[in-house]
Length: 573
Image (tube, rainbow, N blue to C red; front, side, top):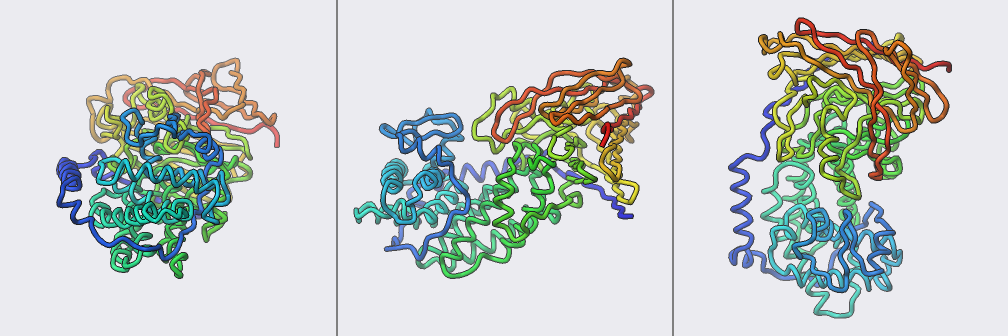
């Protein structure tokens, strides 16, 4: 028997960026715009690069085709190339970040595969855009020169150099090369001022690549790598999760390390060992969050991630298609039996400063039968190509948008007006066992302890053949809030169903029959409550909204406690 117990805590998790950090950031921005900083950025510009990195992340050929047609389109916003002003006030923030990062180089390269030749249609599209951007932002700009954006821009320029440096115009070439050196000098000072997170990694990765491929950057590369190695140790957890608990952050960091690693190859070396070690954790960790349909679910603010992305990572990373089981650090647990896969969120929310778009979905789970998604959460927004309407995006973060228990229609962790996660779940206790008799997982959280005097406990058992899932959701008196728990509280247990599932209630109202798209039938039964079938939705990896249904078990506490048992059993084999 394999048995494991652990307690995960969110210490100071509701504290975002501190006031002193905000003031320091404002002061830094003021300094970067000064004449003193402009003087610091002066220096010799390189006559050439020492090599060209390779971009392992595929671009979108359709976006490149639109650029060729004279339109820069991203995040639902269109800017016409003929009269383009990169800094115009009408551009939304998501479009500005994409445009200022020069990520459109990747899309042009995907549309025009002659990029390695350094001539032809790809260069004729890229060079005018680069020249226009450089003319618009020759000096510091708070958005265009933001450290994470600048780090990405450096990586894109260094790996798509043939697209922007094939011109015979020596003045233009000198301008580009000088800009690359100037951005690196800016990051020498700005990269380490960023708080921990993916943005800091982007700034440091771009700085390190510049140190390798721009002549005279040996000291710069050494300093950047030391800072990047220390950051990876803080961001990447032992079980492959991210400190932010967001799968899209893990994906972004994995792609960043794969991309930056090619700079070392271009300079005649090998990618750092720290990159390989981080990837050996990140990729299995991501694959461990995928259900049988190959899709990584929407956890902690992330949008769902499509299978082709994971397949690409499996080919590029040293661990291949290995899937991690999680649990020890990230709080995500993967249970597999027969053709059934469960992924359970048994961890507290991340620190507010690391997850500005986190979810309040503690103890939620997703489940699949083969390639059919049976139970799911409603979705997330980070990583989608197109933004969702704000009311919908906000609703996806709530506890009710997850397959878990919610008390009095109140989030288990508060979501503040500014989008950060406030007080709520601080501690999650987890016990798990695996034997020949199946998988057991029991977890509890204190998200409703202070407000309602209640502790939430969820017990799960999955049979060895994966055809029988039994659970119990309980509300128990918490050690604090004794007066509050005396009040009778209503609560719901929600099970959001996968797409294509037809739910039919049983005659006694204590269950439902679920017919999957492939014809298989699961029977859901409840002890201690009544089941209703209500509308729901699921946001797919492409951002499409699918109308679905949800099973809702409604009940109330008695004497400050309650217990609801439930089961999902597949009919037939």
